Image (cartoon, rainbow, N blue to C red; front, side, top):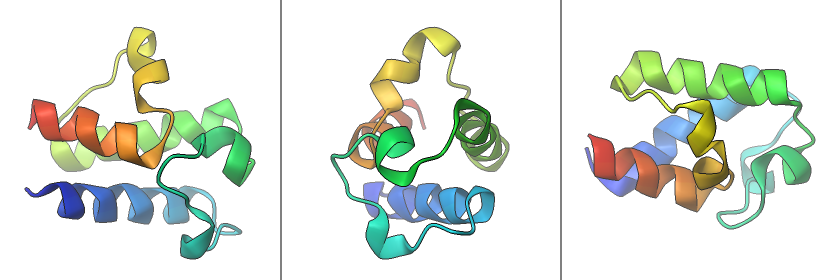
Length: 80
């Protein structure tokens, strides 16, 4: 899976969890929770959906490493 495919999967997961978010609102280097105004429960749902889709689990201790689209895509790319 390429990094662009991973980003697409992440974006699709965000849009599924937060239907009020538009794709163009998702900036690669912005904090996802703050910039999209999603709470920690929705953020966890995004990570859970990605775990099901890609088989990569993100432990709570790594949440700071996946707080932007770019960092999340890199994190998943390294573990696939």
